[in-house]
Amino acid sequence: MSVDETFVHDIVKKVMANMQITGDVSGMHGVFKDMNEAIAASIEAQKVVRTMTLDQREKIISIIRKKVHENAEILANMGVNETGMGNVGDKIMKHHLTADKTPGTEDIQTIAWSGDRGLTLVEMGPFGVIGAITPATNPSETVICNSIGMLAGGNTVVFNPHPNAKKTTIYTINMINEASLEAGGPDNIAVTVEVPTMDTSSIMMKHPAIHLLVATGGPGVVTAVLSSGKRAIGAGAGNPPAFVDDTADVSKAARDIVNGCTFDNNLPCIAEKEIVAMDSIADELMDYMISENGCYLASPEIQDKLVHTVMDEKGRLNRKCVGRDARTLLSMVGVNVGPEIRCIVFEGPKEHPLIKEELMMPILGMVRVKTFEEGVNTAVWLEHGNRHSAHIHSKNVDNITTYAKALDTAILVKNGPSYAALGFGGEGYCTFTIASRTGEGLTSAQTFTKRRRCTMSDSLCIR
Image (cartoon, rainbow, N blue to C red; front, side, top):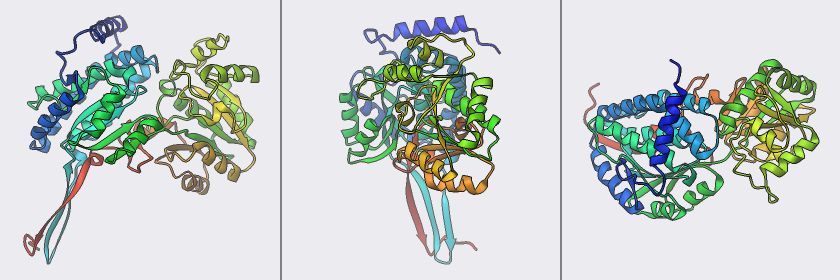
């Protein structure tokens, strides 16, 4: 079914107008003026949720999935309109992916031992009320996958979203609570505040009723939750390198790398941010990217202009450039290209600012290396020890193994686009909270639970 773009645009325009900060959002479920009020409501909701059966939780989750599918176009348009980042088509696909592949209660499993001395169970119980900080890059997607996983584990969640994505987040949270009410569940299973700030974030992190914090975003917010003194899950930055060795299918590697890098204008933290290529195939790889995959080769002059456009004098990213498409970025430096241009490419040293920094833009610098060992060392240097994501294109299993061990990342994609790691064109479940820094990896429902052991001594063994 084709999307009626005019109809969707009119809905989004109306929703955004109604949600101006000077307007009234009091009728929306889960939205409060004061963070303490939001937390109090979440506490009351959790008293109900923790007594619900897994089937009852799953009923709510199934309606959340349905509503995400129904609202995918609206949420995608809202995200792009509010943040100015990404593109609507890819965001629509991301919402459908999140609805279909975020694990629910099936992820909550019991471990059991039985023997001569009785029966022991290890079950996953809720933390209670979870505090979550979410980014502007994937605002509604992160709220959805967090809410599904946290609810499946028996929790409720208090969100402090990025201020630049508050309207999209509020709409999403209202939708999630509507799903709960339709399923006979409580209101306020997910809550937030009308105006999220650093102060509301601080209140949330310090509140005694919140025992688990989850931060999805840049290094600043991750450091903040890790310094809170509470159990924290930190899903932080990455600078994923894509290594192409001399055994790779170069044509496919070029296509996969460009597809991954340009997906949602390079906003996903797992996306290819730079290329490391062995000298013997580097020219061929670059040619395939330019001739067959819509890449623009930036001259040294254009590279310099891009550096001064997408970064300030201190090397900080220009937020007006993050998540923009290649045509827009090139227009900012005086280059006009057609719609076929998807990505900006160039060759440079690993120290080049457009290579060593995580840009979250469809700009791909390529570093040429002479040997496989040099390539591995270069990729390790570029990944900056984030242990987040890395990618390799190779037909040599030993090379892939060596690379995987050296990078030691939460995600490693072999011979595919980066988004395959999220179940899009690859196996496995989806999440937008990838906790490399604290070691949980791709989070799911079981991540948001506590392990509890229950032992019956010398009984209930019926062997």
